[in-house]
Structures are given as structure tokens and as C-alpha cells.
Length: 426
Image 1: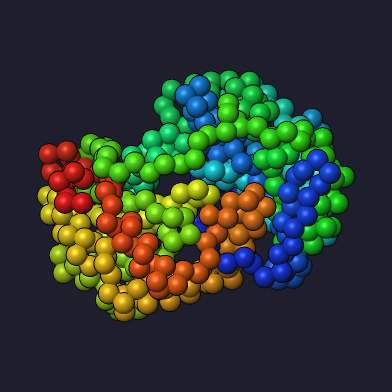
Image 2 (image 1 turned 90 degrees about the vertical axis):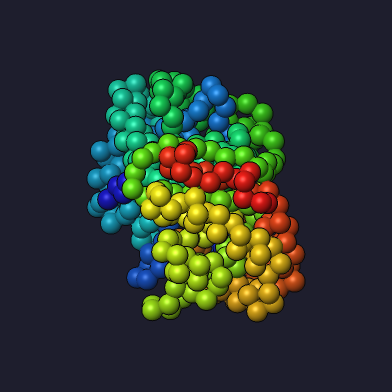
């Protein structure tokens, strides 16, 4: 079946998957694979394009979202109806995903169908028609996804801290903005044309060796991609740079207010720092023993740690949700706990975080999705997005650097009732 495409924040996984092998094609497409497939001969193959939202310019804002939505549409060889029908006959699932760094088209199928679906993915990359009548349908899908995201206060807050922290690049919105300059299929075609160069494309597979997958890729239309890497919409974007002390405000008069407080960090330590915040529930009947978890339980609000790891930057923080009349006090108390207990964490708190992060990372790698994330990061050289285990000394130093710096914030609340980041004492 054709599963709905989705957009997501980057996740960080700690170690390389067992049995990973690497190869490349004659024109420079990087291939990563793990022969460990799923049950009953299940396998997968993904086309990963380094053309996510961070590559958009003012003239192409939203193009990555549109390009994601054009996945598995009509090509020069196949109609979308035929692609879906043949996927169903093979029991395959087709998905498309866009993150801030990459656009991924993925097929999960039985191993004996991999050669066929490599060719399907090759056509997605090289032969999508980008017909104008399809653009109208794609635009409706993009608009619905964007409206859904803008109606979600959590998505608004997390997107807001990205924009406050990184401005452009990693601060670009995941979803196409209202009135996007991408108004025709030609605009999407141009973004794809510049993005789809061999130096920015990887093919990732499970249930197959890298050499075998590279051979299939070399026999497909992907072999026609030019070798010269290029950045979509212009020059390669500058390395991400965290800018602290700023805040985004999304005014709403709802009964529940949300406030995201985020700190810049090294990408390899992002997940462990989120574990150090200690808001994750590890026991069914306990809210946690960390100072932040105890504060939230005692005061009657929620505090959820989050982390994002990218190839050259990391973001870690806490999302506070409270009744609108209490959000200011909840944020102020949360900030005080971070400054008092986390900028110089106790040794036992660091050890708990190291252990929790290691368990979470290894547990993620036990899943098919986790293995794919590691393979994709390896294939595109995005080592920062797949961090290694962090030891106690390194985590203590990372905590001092991150939680001792000026954060950014995003509030989904009434401006008269919320806290402002420059008043929190950092």
C-alpha cells in the first residue's frame, strides 16, 4: 500500500548497526546496507536525497515539502496507479519523508522484490514527470499537512526553537509556508534537478549486501545522475550556527499554553543530554526521580525533554505544557532547576543519564527504523546525526557547556501571560 508521507525531526542513534557494509557506484552514489533483514525475508530499500528544508532559499521556501509529496507520482515509465498497484501485488509499503536535512523515499518489501523496487526508486529520482495537473493534487496534500502542523502547538513550539536557534538553514520550516513561492510544478522540478546529483544521493538497504545493492543501482537509471554535487537552490548552505537569547511567539488564547526552552549542543551528545534532563518515565507508576520530573509532578504541569541531532549541530531542551494562567511560573521554575541542578550535574545524575541514553540508543537500533536511520547517516556522511555512546566525563562537560549557555525559546501562549527567555536568568 502507499502509506501517507510524513515529515519529522531528526532522531539521534548511538552506534552503527551490526553488519553494515558500504559501497559506491561508478558515478559516485553512496550505498549502505545491512544483510540483517526482517522476519520472513523482509527487506527494504531507500533513496535518500540530501535536499531537506535547510537547503531552501527565499525563492524556494517549501520546495522540499513539495518534492517529498511528489514521491511515487507519474514517471516517464509508470503511472502512479501502476506503481501503487504493483506495490500492493508485492505486499510492499511505499513511504516518503522529509526532514530538515534529507528527503527519503522508502520501500519495504520481500527480498526477492528488491530489484524491481530499485528501478521504481530510480524512476522517482530521474523520470518523475512533475505534471501540472498533479501539482494541484500535491498542493492540496501539502496544504493539509502544513495546516495540520500549524494547528499542533507542540509542532509549532519545536519549529519555533529551530527558527530562533538557527534562523535560516536548519531554522527553515519543515512545511511549506502559506503563500509559498513554489507555485508551479516547474519550481519543484528545478529544485529536484539541482538537488539530484550523485554526490547528494544515497541508496540504503536492509536484507541485502552493499555490493549487491550497488550492482542493482548501477543497472538502474540512477547511473544517469551527474557526478557533480550541487546544493538545491544555490550554494551549499553554511554550517549551522546556534544563536542564543532569542524567542519566537505564537499568540493563542487556548486553555493550555506550551513553551519550548532549547540549548545548543554537539549533535553526538544531544540524546544523552535529553536523558540528563530526566523527564522520561522509566517506571509505570513513577514520574521519575530527576529534579525536573519531581518539579513537574509537584506543580501539576508537564515537562518533556527533546533532542535533535543533525550533521553539524544539536539541539536539546524541554517542552513545558501548563494551564495558560500558570505557564509563566512553570517556565521560571523549570529554568531555575536547569540552572541549579543541570549546568553542574551530580555524578549519580550523570551516570543515570549515560545508562539511560545507552539503553535507548541500543533499543532503537533493534528496530528496523533505527537501523535505517544509522544507514542513512553513514551513507551521506552525516556522522553527527548518529552519535556514539557518551561517557560520564564527556556528558558532564557537555551539560556545563549547553545548560550554562543562553537558550532560545518558543511560546504558544498569550504574550501577556508567558515568560520571556531574556528574563530567565541564563
